[in-house]
Image (cartoon, rainbow, N blue to C red; front, side):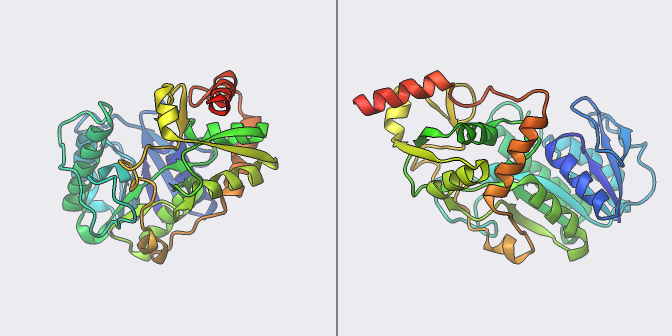
Length: 330
């Protein structure tokens, strides 16, 4: 196939381009080029998607387009430039489009969405981001046609080259071994997807005629299984100390991401549905996921090869030790 990746210079876009090239496809990446470089072997065109005519340099027809846009006007411009000459369009959307994040085991086919925001800035906050992604979905399906538009609602993407540092915190922490502060309880749900598994599904989508909305995330695992996979991938023995969310909140430990946080953890019950989605439809549509331990091993190997590692997520070593001391002394 001739594949156009709108993006292709960061994380998922790079993984899509890399795996498409490995499969023998012709890959063209189009982006500003300010966030990174495309993978070796991909052709690259510098574009400004804020400009309504910014995609004019993309000539010819494409069997498939992969778009990671979050700004609705970027999708609007893509529709105008490409709808008549692209066979299949995959919009990488987000699980943030869902209005109800408290109810577990929801499915993409019948879950309620946030109202669309066609003019907002998705960088403003999490809800605006979700509303903008809903708008992107609608523009894509209307412009390219529902029968050839795949709306992939990605969950928490992890693995090598992850720029967020969320999963990386736990990989680094597992590699140190010893007593680990684990938030919540062992039975709470966690969902992640290796970036390479998501990329493989995206590349297969045009040939399989995937259309409509599906969640791009692995099946839920328990938090105990999550930590077991971390330990197995890092090749360490660790002792988990489960600390409840009330204790953490009282001491200013933030959920999800950022400094003094415990990433990939969200308070319950208000977020009980965010990491526990029913993805049986996605698995039936060809999504395959690797063992978590494999993702951990490869992420750890990428750390050792990297010149810089983002350490701005999670607890510092001294912060974790002090919290554990307070927990045991309570």
